[in-house]
Length: 186
Figure 1 (cartoon, rainbow, N blue to C red):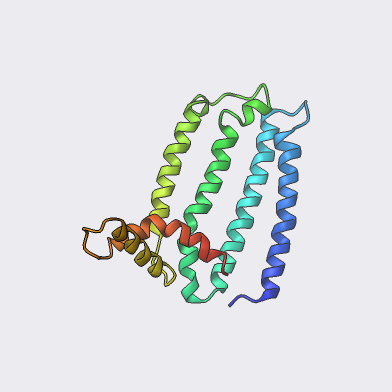
Figure 2 (spheres, helix red, strand yellow):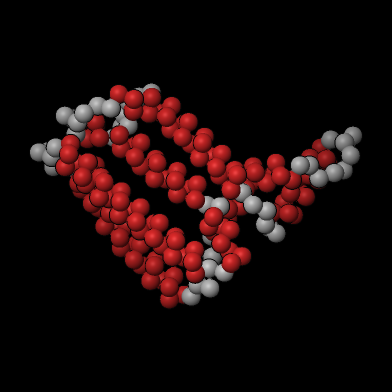
């Protein structure tokens, strides 16, 4: 069970560290000094990236270990979101509006230039989205929603028999929303 002290301490630590990494990111990565080289910019980016990764994964794993067993499913079903965020950081940095815009003499990575960076993001997001769909799980809050959707669908089509549609399919489509909503209730 999480207590308020833990929540406040973790929240303050994350706030301070994210303010620092955001400042560092803008000062050293997004708006570097004019004499900065690509390697210096890459080092600054990797420092920010690794700090954010360690902070987010560390606090998520620590909180996961402290919650009640029935709440752990929420954490297991949300790893796809963290993967999407950190994959986006990397592809955005090396993509067409990333380091090649910031540092004029940066080496161009041809497979991450426009439109390929966008196509790669679409493919990556689709794969992560599929993982997100598979991570959905049935909650007590979801059951009434599934029944209501079934009733609304049958109300529109008066000739169809009153039955609950494939709940597993509806669960997959609405599982992402439920995971986000349940996470906010911690």
